[in-house]
Length: 330
Image 1 (cartoon, rainbow, N blue to C red):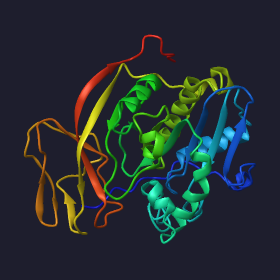
Image 2: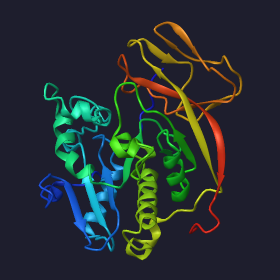
Image 3: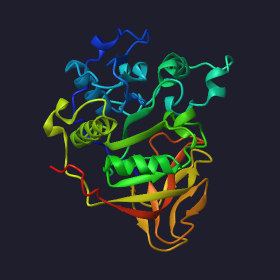
Image 4: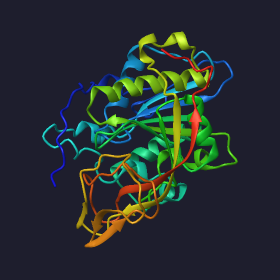
């Protein structure tokens, strides 16, 4: 079964002018209002071929957005991978040596025996990230699927998702066996910490609608954190809010045992199987079945297939959150 080929509908921004910054870390810009408030970070390019976040951060930097309260960091993460993007092989620039979003434990970052392009970049960004209170990490997806929030496993992630109000689907999960994500790093993943983070999967990597989602969630996140006022951002960045949000709890990942993995159909994500025991694929020749009724597939993809990689996560709708009555609609 051949993977679909998605057209590249967006223009990749030239981020070269943003290399030099006062933080001392290339492509990481922090602005301090001098007024008490949280340190809020908008991060793009955790993966080098996920361009919607880079478009938004580039726009914010070119517009010279500055915080009214607290501090604001605007960052491009895996710049080396981004520079390698090749439209003929668009999935190949996700990372250089290893997934940047699987290295975020203190033990891994402190281990001098470990080295990669991504680890060097994570270590360079770490001092800034250690001081961040609220993180919005802008991502996109291999396959054409509805946008979603990855809120992590904690109640505080669900609460922040509800305050943001969009996208519709909120995924609660423990992450990946391969390694920890930035959104789960230290205080972000500590229930006793007031720090919090959301990862937004804005849509398929190169579709125009993913940029619209990235602009919308960024504007709402910054206004919610009160580092800026709503009028500081373009009014047309906001999109209509959904009538309700679905909280989906991931119960288990499906991890490839070898390169011999195939799905039973061309899944793109959020498919629901009414019956337990439904065959969704084969892993090293063994059938993969849904463990319970109304099982949802979360971000299935074989584009980065290799042993040990999560190829899909299985989830169940846990609850529904009505739209906030005071939420701003357009």
